[in-house]
Length: 247
Image (cartoon, rainbow, N blue to C red):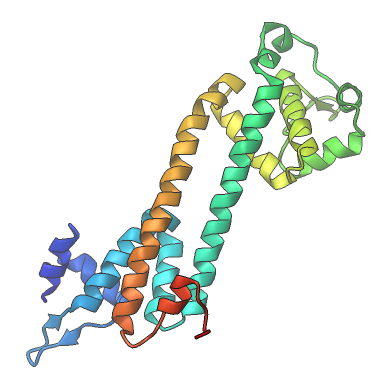
């Protein structure tokens, strides 16, 4: 089929299809005696697989997966897919941690009384949380806390929102969350502006995770179809059915 015919199937331009070929996302096209490209069902399956992978894993990872599959490096492709699944699972775990922490902390921490409170020093905040000041420094180093510095003394000053962040970090650490996850959560909180605002982002966040999970399922089917088109003689049915290599 011509580039334009393949492109129309997916709402693409003919140039986009040629770009996929040039980039190694799909195999090189067969050429007619006059030099025109002639795509077949394998190319069509490759384009469908790539377009399904993008919403599931993003452009960069999807390109890496397709380069590996088209280049005959299946294990490499599966490693990229595994990493995408791990990232999705980590994001789900982070969402659960945020929901659990917010239910304990509550929105009252950012009320008027808290906003007018005198800033804590690092020692005062450590005593408030029953922690060692070194722990707060470690959280700051990881990006979980971002206290300002007194311009005259250089000492840390923890304002109301910093105390709120520290309390939430403390809850998450007690729940076993790693500092990297906590820094991500608190970054989301700072972007949202308040606990209430962060709470309002949880449902869209959950919908996004569900969408990514569904996209990964669909992409797996499209990629499997492409693998079969690339190598019809390969017997992957046993592994898909869970029977392994036993007869």
